Image 1 (cartoon, rainbow, N blue to C red):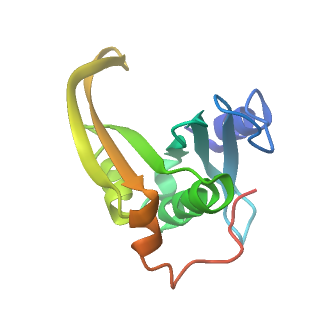
Image 2: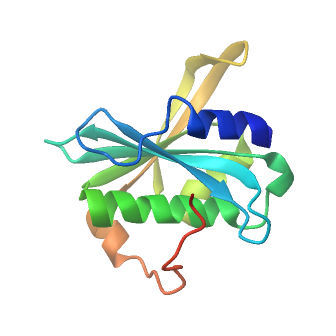
Length: 154
């Protein structure tokens, strides 16, 4: 996905600035601090107030892979979920064939809880899905020494 497509998503139907009730999603653009170039987006979905459940997702321009931007931005979104929204559990669903994307939740302390075989029709074929999750107490037990107080989320 190129920067124009990402910008259209962020400023289009996902222009929400706060989560007020379950079923809503907050999508945030991720830009390079040096240039302001939009390189991807992260999303926090609030699934259930009663069960305090949420989900994260992310899409990044592959030209910027391996620089830590996706990890940093997704880490900030987990802070939003646990610290600000007060969720108990956050999950991430990943296409099993996207190995780079599948490594990201593990770097954030999420554990793989499921491998769903041929779970979804995706890009013209049946794809497997990997489900990852982290609980609030697991998140709190994780060291966050290197967190940036100010994120590059726009």
